[in-house]
Length: 373
Image (cartoon, rainbow, N blue to C red; front, side):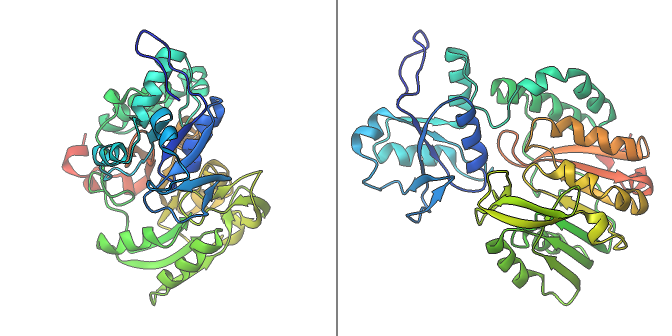
């Protein structure tokens, strides 16, 4: 349970509960495990027992297996990253269900860090503390003040849970109107295609789509993707992961956005290097949201990037090192002949994306007025 006040350090005995069993659940869980804080279960209003996340049970708020005594003593941390979720409403509903110690994720993490020196964050802050020079280099190459401020806030939040430095959440990941539009017609490579949500978003944003190559290794997600991708366009869906080389790797199948390559995965999947799978596809846009495998996947696509110079939308929030390693690696390919932007699309540092516009697509004439130098 959570014990203590500001003058008396908190403890987390015998464990905590996390509210939210969606795509971010495994990611949040990893931070608590790294801190040595037992997670007794997940609470989710869409729970469908006997559903589990990483072997930990998921309960509905009314599930009697979580006793009244546990609700009074244990902490419930609302760890939902969806920016449109009503956190105050969730916390109020859980209080009405008998939970006496309900915290937002950032509030809990910040207080625990101050009082106990324990860090339960999604990302380990130690690598960021060791790579200040690399982070400074990334800041120099970023192309607008919004991106630079977001990088500063990202680092501050990972270290301290302090949200004050984070810029506002930018709506519409991949198709935000705060950045240049992608080159049309789109020839999209979608790595981590999930159920075709990015393709739907492109259509909703008015893009003309010429061709799609989509990669999704989770069998449940892939089945949904097949229904979405039959659009009468030049499209292919591959039931594969994407990495630096072609081969088989272990994969943790969650049936949601949290599925990921993992050494402890429950299944073995085929992975491909994009240079091997689609060497002559000539993409205009490459999107990657593959749960920490982005750097390896980019390395496996180096020839594709150098040959066709596609625009990029790359997740840089799954591993602490991604926020500097990925931008600096791409800078070695295009240098100043590209524009580099960061945007944050969810709570905390979740859904922080690096957008890259190489060569002629970085011309000022294509930029929104607010981004022109």
